Image (cartoon, rainbow, N blue to C red; front, side, top):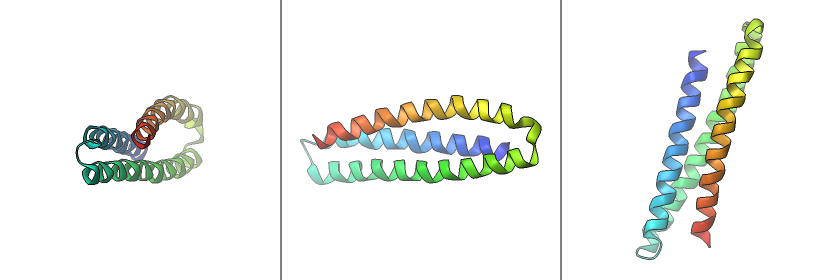
Length: 102
């Protein structure tokens, strides 16, 4: 279970960094295009890192459930709540990234 908590926490970190860089890109957009592009690229990379962590999270969940079948409902319920929050957060970041490209 500790692995799952760690991965959820790391995914949150990546999402926070993605938003931070997207905001910096927007701030620099009109003043310093190379810097803005750097921040935009970093934001996109953070989403890639988030996806890598999420893929590992799913694998770890499957392993955990195989070892602890009695906790499957509990693990899936927690996953649904936390994943929904993270998906919504990622969607807002992607909207912000899209507005940078306009």
